Length: 202
Image 1 (cartoon, rainbow, N blue to C red):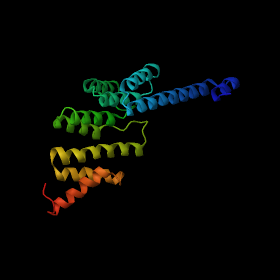
Image 2: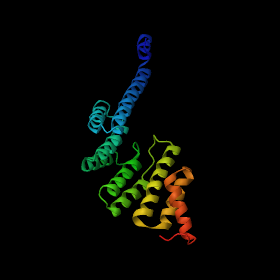
Image 3: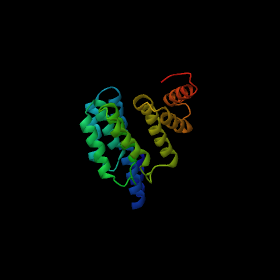
Image 4: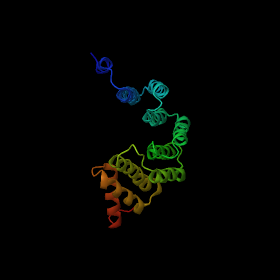
């Protein structure tokens, strides 16, 4: 007998039923998104996108599927549709209280950096990411990691694209405060130190 069948036999209170129904939906939606990510990882983008759209249709309250859909469209190379998806999220969750907009802005920054070669818009989206509010449903520790991910991207962008060693070093340090073994930030930080000593020309 399944767990949910057991609950039906015991006739739990309405509040308990609602809680377990919510849990059931959450688990089902998460499994579907995980499967879509597996499809994406092996290059089956259309299957992944179809599944993600099905999740959003059946379980519209499972919001992580929205960002995964955007990143999957970007991985497929459908850049304009990916941008539309990210901007749709910004419209639907404008106050950021129930959605980590930091990830959406960072993805838009990545999109403009990698696919549109627009450094000005790239940096503006990353600035918005760093200034976005922490959602109520995200822990402080999880949000610190999200911020550190943005700092990792920015240290690389300032190093390779903007060629601003001082700013690149600052963001590398912020990343390494949280993720001490980040290879990208470590490489940027060490290079900046050597450049400051005059051992390397940039």
